[in-house]
Amino acid sequence: MKIATFNINGIKARINALPDWLDEARPDVAILQEIKSVDENFPSEIFEERGYNVETHGQKSFNGVAILSTLPLEDITCGLPGDDSDVQARWIEATVIGDNHPIRICGLYLPNGNPAPGPKYDYKLDWMERLLARARQLLAEETPFLMAGDYNIIPQAEDAAKPDGWREDALFRLESRTAFRKLVNLGLTDAFRARTQGPGHFSFWDYQAGAWNRNNGIRIDHLLLCPQAADMLTDCAIDKDVRGRDKPSDHVPVWVDLAA
Picture 1 (cartoon, helix red, strand yellow):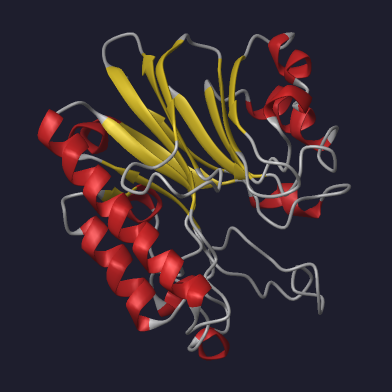
Picture 2 (cartoon, rainbow, N blue to C red; picture 1 turned 90 degrees about the horizontal axis):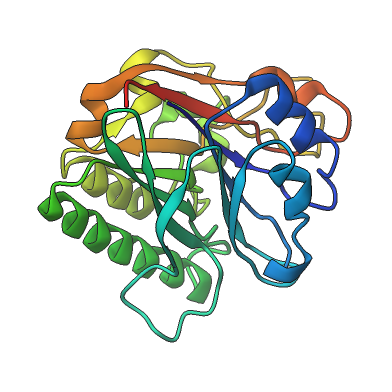
């Protein structure tokens, strides 16, 4: 089962690029972030005609997450548990039934948190505490799962071309990296780092200051696998070349293959 995560930075802006990538990459499941669309305006028919089931958790002009799946989606839920007052569309879950195993798919768009410190950074750290609690709950249920999306976290210095420039940014502050490490330390596997080591591997390049041409990127899009899902891992890669195409997102897809 090929599962990809992709922050598309607006479905309207990526109305051609996203279907083109899907036709080429053919993931069984695509987890999208920043669709920037309410549910009723999301162009589901474009993806349904390609054989995808579509579930969205949208929000006007901001945020928004979605799951596209060639396999049936069951038990769909939206919104990260733990704060009923949180109206930001950043979390969607569904179960996909593979040939041998069900996989609980958790799609997330973690808050950016800038400027830090401040209320937006507090929200980011609080959100990560809720994420940690959800991971603990899923682990206790012993259902295979993965948590995939734009984490807005640079885990280590090697995940940035110029780490010194990010030291006080919400994506790389010590509190952010510590919260991410707590999640991994529950027993989750960073799928990309399980397959590829060393610096120079990025999933985001800013539109400004020639970041793409200079390869001044960061790795902030992650797939974290529970132990059962990690045992199924056969491959993981970043589709870097997508960033150099016509009207690209500032992110690129990251995908895993699971023997599910």
